[in-house]
Image: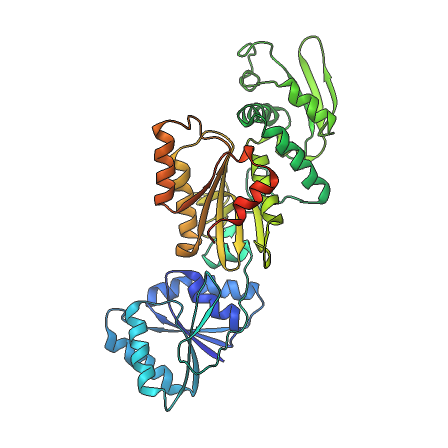
Length: 417
């Protein structure tokens, strides 16, 4: 079986039939340079899915309809049956396909379909009642990033994507931490930021759980810069001890404190501001359902995306272009990029979200910003922010800390997907 794809700037439009039909051959028709540049990406993608697909390419002048008609005519004449995927491609190429179909529809078996990426519906464009695509495939977050030429940067002590273990006990822990955080999210941010700053000096490796530092009685009292940034909240310490998140807590008369984090995951929750909001968002996204079952097919947290799938050493002249997205979801073939803000933010958060979503989802990507508080929510800046988000088609879930679990799930269920 051979599929003819009209090359499109949006990767999923080029590869949807590979996933849905699994043909033996795919012929790309379009701009020569663009096709050549993306060939390695598509070959890598089909290898990941253990598909044995042979790619070939027929370049055309996208501005000359006669040239396009000649190339399509040559393709049709070389074999009795082709499947033409009209999901992508320039308008002029699609017009040329109509001309060729009209000429050869009675002498050649030309199957044409068009797939709606958002809904998963398939249009029978040749109107013969035969649909080769009978079941719409799904993609993982990693698939979606890979199809656009990127990759998920692996975790290291210097960065990358931390792989969370969402076991039942940890999910319960996150819900407890969220309940603590949501009482005063601004204070939680300040405390976890300062605790993380000190932990970076005293136990920098993720596996180091023993914490010991001087708790200053007055801010700026210590000669150590990290110590000066501590904001100690005894209320939180009591809660952490109560739930077993920290152990062996000691504080002497000179203000020296020591304890051990229960494990590496809890350490990240307590030392990286905003992590708990990201985690509770991921958990609720995994739990939310609609009438068809789970709303999201895949959920990934704290994803560091490498734009070109080539990881360079820290001392390399060439530097990686990377972006971290707090939560990425897959709804069928539609990626949903979620930014979580547990502190003050501004328009820059919208532009960052827009940039990454456009690069790794194109027109099909959905964008969501989930936040606790904006800051001065009654001033003109907040009204401007809300309008800007609307203009950029970024959906907002605000005051998340005031939402019950059911209210949060309802907000997620009502997203425009």
